[in-house]
Length: 441
Image (cartoon, helix red, strand yellow):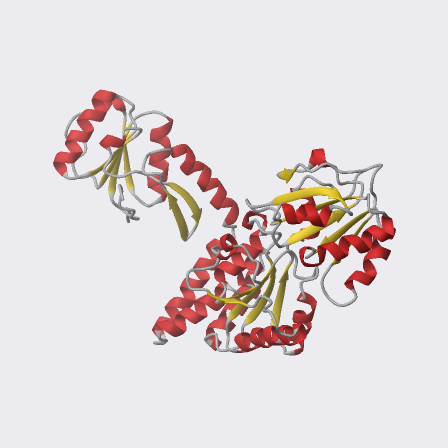
């Protein structure tokens, strides 16, 4: 580490700013907000010895001679000094600050790029809403109260985690301070011994950057994340360092209904132990993700549930391949189905005839039979595409006809999860990252 990060208490301390320009005015104002006793010395008035007694000095004079003299004086006296835009003459550097008092976030590039520090500050400011200030203050009040009561650290930590995962911040964001305080005090009084909470979270089509902000926050804060087998490792890496991961993806030889019942039972078990649990599903949990079944089971058990939709692969996979599922003059209707589960093949023909574009999820395992069924309904020469690992760096797309698409997908080694798209909207010249097979019409 080039610099040791630290926050300095300057209340009532003499701090000197050298200079007359914009930088000097800004630095003096910032020091004043920190409670410092600020003395501003104009460039023309600086003389060696003027820094005596200062706790901290900022030289914003932009004068090389003054820079050299102030640095020498401060070094000899052991005074912390920052010479603006002169990294070699800085005993400290001022970071970019995100203020949500009493929360402060300091960002530094160790003097390499103040511009990047400023850009990162802007990003964090968008992420940390105004509610974080009163939330930190509220947690601080509760912390002092719990310490006075002699509550053990482990029990305190459970309270803080429950506060973080509660609706307190949402209430503060909506400026319902009284309700937020009431909820927070109730959590503190119960010491987080009550039932936990479950979030049914959509992970999106694969790329973690396509997850919603709320989804990313929930998996980062969760005690447990129960995830599908095909969730990308990059997505799981967004979970908190103490979050426990459980892979509850489909396992061969296990009955589907029994597997789903055991997942729901595990969610209920963990919630009743007081944990905050995220059930992480690919795509959207309510689009062939059994989210509805889990919601029913959790609600019947009296568990608090929050649902966070995700971007479904039904739309994301074609879009990532450059295929619009609707296009003026070409397609004005879309049908979505799956190649998995009882009766899936029986409904394919009717859906293919009824819609301009047919999107079939989880299509790879039954692709030959699926394409044949659809081909008998709308013709084997109908354009088709298969998109594998949509939105991930390993995404691959093949295009062809229904008669050839299964063979082409096998030759291109398309991997699951894969999505089949059928209809006139499939055009090979639009396919992104695809394997350039021609459509035989």
